[in-house]
Amino acid sequence: MSLAAPFWPAHAQQGGAVLFQNVRIFDGKSETLSASSNVLVKGNKIEKIAPAAIATDAQTVVVDGGGRVLMPGLIDVHWHAMLIRPTPASAIGGDVGYNNLLAAAEATDTLMRGFTTVRDVGGPAFGLKQAIDDGLVTGPRIYPSGAMITVTSGHGDFRQLSELPRTIGGMLTRMEQIGGAMVADSPDEVRVRVREQLMQGASQIKLTAGGGVSSPFSPIDAVTFTEPELRAAVEAAENWGTYVVAHAFTSAAIQRSIAAGVKCIEHGFLMDDATARLIGEKGVWLSLQPLPEEMRQNLREGSVERAKADEVWPGIGRTYELAKKYKLKTAWGTDVLFSAALAQRQGAILASLVRWYTPAQALAMATGTNGELLALSGKRNPYPGKLGVIEGGALADLLLVDGNPIENIKLIEDPAKNFLVIMKDGKIHKNLVVGSKLN
Image (cartoon, rainbow, N blue to C red):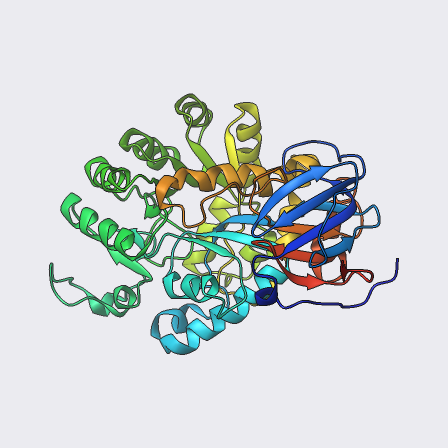
């Protein structure tokens, strides 16, 4: 079938119907594709899936799949929408208006890579989310955490030494004023900062329970929040029906987080076997990222950040093996920071999971499994409905792929060529299929 670029603006499809004919379905869960099927989308949900023809009215947009693969939109659950394109210095010290415009441009590119949903785990993304939801900007669904909450000297504390000492109850620093990160050094302060993020619309709360690579004064081995401080965050979040996600590399940071009631651990690359077993026993989620080598190499040789990366990177493969060994509830994300070029490789980072998983398992992780993690937000879920799967009643975030990603996952590395249709919330944002027509 020949290709061109018939296109109906997303806003013109509000409340309309779209029929995908003759597609093989990867449903976000299975190891195999369906037989030739038809999928009817009405409004923003999948209404019907059937092997036989589906009757439609004259206003239905019909997309002839030509036997291609229809799959759910991709989900990245460790994303920083406001921190992809700026430099670290401009992210904090730059003009807020410009940084929002920069993030909006990146959001459009993110959607055009086939990522219809992201979970933002730190950054002032509330305004960007609203602009996308209101149709002012084209971009993915955003599950925002708001400002990451840290302790003095913890991961996420990007203040300079010249800004110390901190005056308790005094003026907020620039980092805090723009909503990038908030410093909290007691259970009471933690409660305030958590409630502020919830007040602004956070769907989950992000704390940094241990040291990190990118923060200059935060040793990797440091365990930051005390258990009462972590428990204060968990209690405040649970009072709102949602959960806390904790950045933690080491066993000590992970174990303390779990003891306090944290529901999702980010990274975990330096944990031991006993800690992995504990994660499984407690039913806690592990959100992993197959961090590419160039991310480490982009850090300046001899810098503190590079030394910390050299400590963390060897643990990535070992952690994936532990996740498989104990059958942990494992989510997938990228954690791209300060690199538009690396963001363009979002699909390739996902494809790199084949070091440990089959293509079908990797794709299921970035669709159906990630969708299950997003549902932990309960009533704080900004997009009620089922994400990451193709089934009746699920939200209609769909990709039509020119080829079979179950056989060749590298297809997702070139979304401009291989994603012929990108649909989010029942609206077509890209369509390169000739023969698409109003019935």
